[in-house]
Length: 190
Ligand SMILES: CC(C)[C@@](O)(CC(=O)O)C(=O)O
Image (tube, rainbow, N blue to C red; front, side):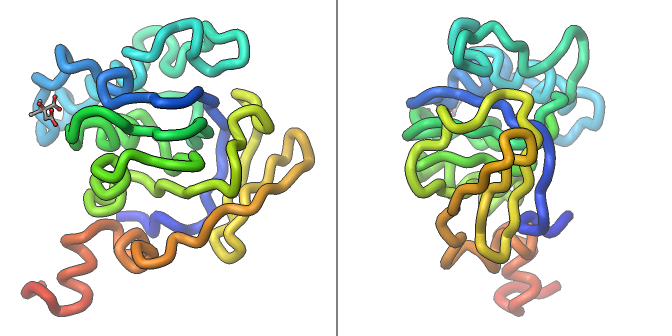
């Protein structure tokens, strides 16, 4: 399990507000095994497949998150508007984004269940932005997250933005999830 709050760098994929779990991974795709090495790749292939094409990558949309028959995205950091991960409690939502190669999400706000699934499952790091950055970043921008500040650096636009500290979930994120954290802290046997 990688240290989830280390320096995360990669290309941005921008989304709007209220991206729900059915847009992230439509219910029809909840049939694949998450433990079978080959089947689990399909979660990456269909990640964000429920996002309306007109909103995919914004501002004028129609930017594919996954190209062709690939199961991994060229993008590593999602920058979205408010209320990311709303809707159902499916853990497949953060899981499919991790399988597709997403390391972190930046949004002003999250649905609580999606946020905790992301952290506790060690799937990806959900950073809260200070304000909505979905119009300050463009899909394809080269980003880097400095966890020490924390801050988002946009190397393409030569800008930087404050992020809210991870706070109480930092130790769980750094451990790579709640089970690793529980073993590390002796809450459960190693
Ligand atoms: C059980 C799962 C398929 C669920 O029904 C759970 C939920 O609705 O929170 C979903 O749609 O994600």
